[in-house]
Image (cartoon, rainbow, N blue to C red):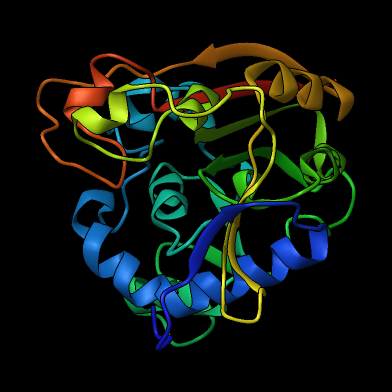
Length: 275
């Protein structure tokens, strides 16, 4: 981070406004480092659902690749729009939305486009996922790979916005940190294999500066909470995918690692259909 201080990690309440401001600031400050560290794994036009490396090309959670052609698809929390570029390569018409201006600048850098859109037919939009700037029923599908939902205080508000901009029957697939991981230390080694906190403690994880201002916020929901949120927003849950760690993936990414991945799930992917 670009501060002279080391942020203090704590568990405390964080409002929707504080969470949004912290997320925008954190991703703007850390986008360069994030893309430098993880860019090779994410690729320029790869759709990967999480650190395990499960690809949409293999998983088909949005449906058969041939069925994406001509579809208008919204990616939420798109970062540098790697997933959206993969969708464009399948013939879809993706819109990549992110709260962070700097992340979207990386989308332009990778796409090498100077006209405000990433190469490959991806439209970029800077906006908050809790107030999507689109008309009702504007999209056929939506997706989010670790984008927005883990960082918002009111996930139902975001989910309802996604439901609003989807046509009836439209599919929304999103991935988040698997809720069980909140009970374990965020460590990739053996120290991360012992339960250290209550799974049922929903108190947000907050990193704050010397004045107590949040600079990073992540919100915990149990599996049951996530299911109820999905239903409350007007979706039908049709699948819950917990990717297993593949033998060929030897990398560590924060608290994700082969050691832990073989024993406990690290990612949860919710496959939903708009009612």
